[in-house]
View 1 (tube, protein in one colour):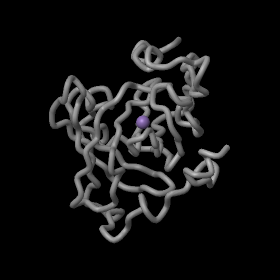
View 2: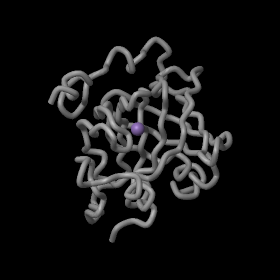
View 3: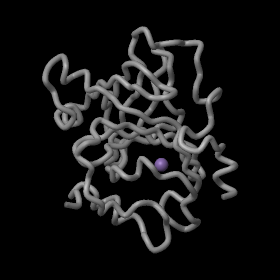
View 4: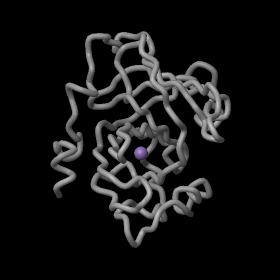
Length: 195
Ligand code: MN
């Protein structure tokens, strides 16, 4: 069953032109709580932070990318839900298409919903509330992260992404600059752009 929340995703893209997934695949029920962070150079460089919620990836565009430092707040603009299969997409979106530019799989893994553990709030309820707390088990990012909705800009939800204070917090680490390569292919943005 194609997900209803993918309508906006599909409307924005021409799948004859782009190699991004069309999102019609059946979801794999065995895979749960996946997250992915894609570095996306679409003229404006940003990091797309995506968390599996049901059969889709709830998504935010984070211009400065996530931090391992709990004193850093990062702007995160909510974007349209993406299909689960988008988590495997790395490549170049052609000129003239929506989001044209290079996409690199910067990090991925599983997450735990901390609000579910504390107060039985599932991810859908957390998104409605405007407060998401997850524990990431990625290759580059680990530990608790919180997303808080702070308002709207022209109909688009504005959130803040922040590292929680826990044993994985580390103000000296800056993985955005020290670990730029793809966790899928080992490639740099430049190498993906050339393929
Ligand atoms: Mn993007």
